[in-house]
Length: 279
Image 1: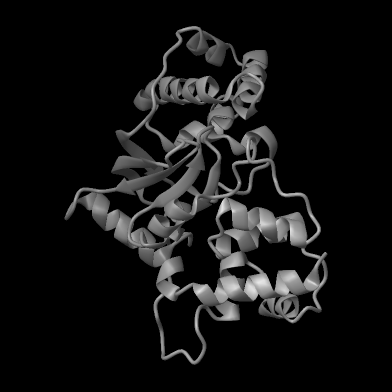
Image 2: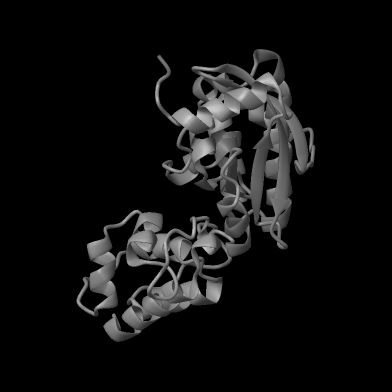
């Protein structure tokens, strides 16, 4: 680990960002340029003391998980991420297979979406980051590991829990869409990829998936209209819009309700109460 390089790089990246770049309010007058340490620490879910020690060349070697969190908090490009990993004494993730690096462009858009649910997903349905309203609506989707990170995998592996948020008469359509989207990723990434691994695993235990896979349906979802059943507020009708990165490896999913509708009122209530249980 090159402590000097790590400290200088983290400080320079922090000072190059403004609060609006990461979805924060400007706040009171700032004495120093860029973000405060406590703001970056909050974005990275780490202690301010830990970040301070890193910037003062006296912290421990950051773990891969901590470097990934800093990468997102500081909105680093792939080149910047790889540099940070190397000077911190780690090999950077493989660009060809790793999708944990969230596109800074999508993150900038997500940062500005505070009044409607939104999330960034990989092209195999892994939720990479959610805003607070997406967590309130759908629950925490980023805590899964392995193949279960993929929504498509969970859809067929755990149908009782995964499908409960959709009306029963819409679940067959959603199954078709999950398979058709996975086939798009399979075509882009090939059989020896994360998409191929998912397909092989699902063919091994899900007769439903195998039946739908044989239909060879190929479709990417750009727009959709769906009903989400929230455990406290009941059904909420939402329009879905998708924004892809240029290479289509990641997408920003935005969920909106018709203005002045009952569904919009439910989203507003979610924004106030978050993940609290409604009494």
